Image 1: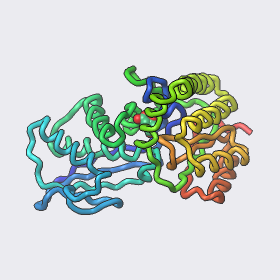
Image 2: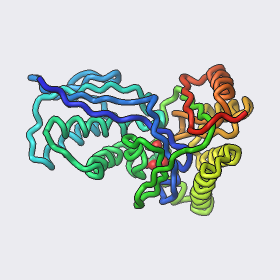
Image 3: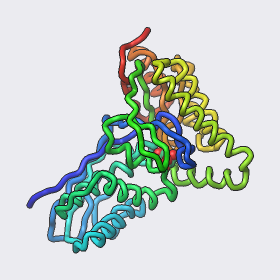
Amino acid sequence: SASHSGKAHGKIILIGEHAVVYGEPAIAIPFKAASVEVIIKKTDRPVTITSNYYAGALSKAPKELNYLSVLLQKISSDFKKTIDHIDINITSHIPPERGMGSSAAVSMAFVQALLSYFDISLEKEQLLYYVDLSEKIIHGNPSGIDARITSSEEPLFYKKGYVFESLPLNISGYLVVADTGETGQTSRAVADVAKALKNNYEIAEPLIRHIGELTLKAKSAIFNNDLYTLGRTLSKAHESLKQLTVSNNSLDQLVKTALEAGALGAKLTGGGRGGCMIALATSRKKAESIEHKLLKQGAAKTWIHRLKGEDIN
Ligand code: MEV
């Protein structure tokens, strides 16, 4: 029988995570090196999932996949469709729970595949409504940036409640991305920042505003092709995130290793408390040597992502 597919990719937050939840800007980059495809087919069994993470009946899936049931029910009821027996096949190359937008990408690909299955076509904003909905289930108070970047071709400058701007990274340089191998805890980290704002407002609020200022600084460094300022700005953002308590030892260690290996700047990326970090390098050669040291330091996996522009030495 006919199959229906949806595709999306992962993301890297260059700068602004956590603060973006409170109205500060953030810059995110589509990360095509890690993508997701969801294929939906009609079957004669109850709804099933096939994925690396879990295979079996949707009704018995671990709670981490609740959002798929919720999306299925919500979309079916919004469009007055009965839920057929379908098989949901998820092929994901995005490591889950690493701050790379895996859940938002799976949601996006799933929503696309399901709408295609139901023969419904929606505007992008409506698709994003459903992806945001599933992000709310996953971590309570999403800014919306993950949902948007998983289907964007361009890096985005994003501020909650505003139209997002595409922000081409016309800057030379490379990002080394390293996975600590530890599951990040975005929902707990987001909840703890909320708690800090409630109980320690005098400390937490200026940190959030400062990250917002750093993000604006990063944006102008990008416009000025000033890789050095960008690097320093990323490192400062890491310090603020650390003070907000969303880093952890493994992330701090990898950031330190990258800086010692000659990175212009380094920080955690995404929700933190595990997951991934990024480091900025001037050339591919430098990026490879940083990558090598990060792996030696215990990084589970690394990627090199080229920004635009020519190498500088
Ligand atoms: C997670 O990728 C980014 C956070 O800022 C949460 C969000 O924006 O929804 C930590």
